[in-house]
Image (cartoon, rainbow, N blue to C red; front, side, top):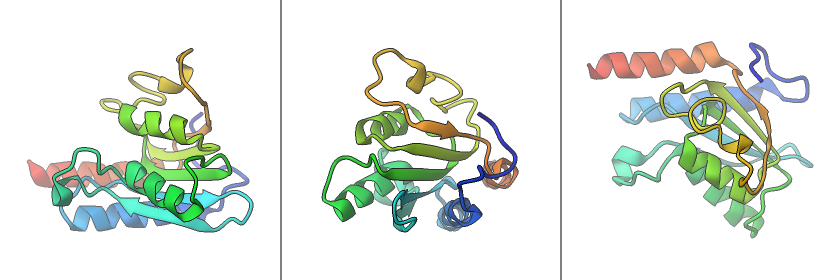
Length: 158
């Protein structure tokens, strides 16, 4: 589902925080992706991260993966069934798989990733019969801002 505006239940500041984290990533030479995890019942941010692939020299150090690990540690549980993930870019296959395994309740993402995305593009992981869990998905939130960050980042790299 693509939307230009945030879902009625979704405070705009969560996506704004994910985008702020993406800007931090960009300032550090990382692909500008930021992620925030909120707890559904309290509405509190329990984890936040941005890409650290280059700094850590770790291809798994995506914003979503780092935020999921933080949230699980915070809750002391592998299950994030009462949590929502806000991320500035459509998750890749690795991150979508982690989202399914963590049983995240809702996924809100910004820009589509036509090349590497696995939610509404590419593998369409959550549409596969074998997926363990399907979150509610709200895509295209603040997509223009998130997409512009990515465009600016890759233009500067060329």
